[in-house]
Image (tube, rainbow, N blue to C red; front, side):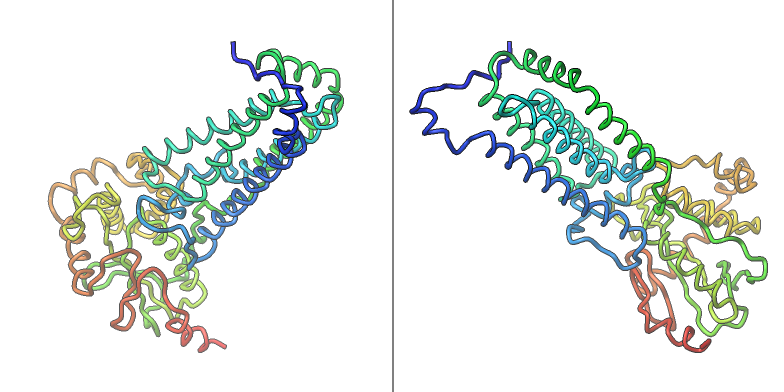
Length: 400
């Protein structure tokens, strides 16, 4: 049977171990929890900035496999309508609350059994999140890894404190902690009610800023098709034409596209937005040599087919929304929502006309040395990621 261990009461041992008093352990655990709260709070902030700030890039966006932004942008970064990092903040606060309330007990350090179980659950959550990063997101977040370390350290320190201050088996001491909670159930019921209200409020009212919300359709904004078959929206005689090369599975593409649609709505007689496809799919794009956004080429073909059916901008919004919110695409559901015939689309894939248009877009991108998405062609110059303010300022200032 696992035992915490019994304290040795000799004066010699007390001298040797005086620095490891209950207060010392308490402070160490408190500081570790504060580190967990600070790290999780940063992740909450970073999650928000990823969706709200067009130019934001976290310090740990290092590579494809080690990228905090990729993890934040994943649908797995949200659980029950609340960012996972926010649940982390709540978990560490719960841990501190439990430790402080047990601290007021009769023993020098009560509640260690409960704290070991809680930190053990935290570590299991860390393991689950690490597996999601490995097999589903396929990218790791440095700050997330830091919280994994915090959770393991909490488990180690609480276990060491148990070995230092508790006697008897772990199960025996855990039962004693539970009995203590039952004796003081008024206090613990009050805590439970507070946390239930907090969690319920978070699930019900946390702002869903990560959801892609298309702008309301405005029939007064003109749309059309260029001579090369590309769709446009905005001014018939534009002061500024923006050609976007995008990939529906590219997070930044969706964020920038919505921003540009907003500009078109604000300046419908001055800005024209032209859409061209550049899927980072090695099966559809010969310029891509390894898998990046697999199946994004198929989504581009669906959008090209929708353009033939005069539903491009509707399907365009649906695809950007689906890419942000879903873990996988269901073409049947997308076609049903947009009023497209899936069988007709599948038939169109076989005659080559959709592939021909996609190839034309990719060729146009290559002719302008486009290698990443989103990229924007404006007055003969290519801008990658975002459009500098000075490029847009002539249009904005002309309306003042």
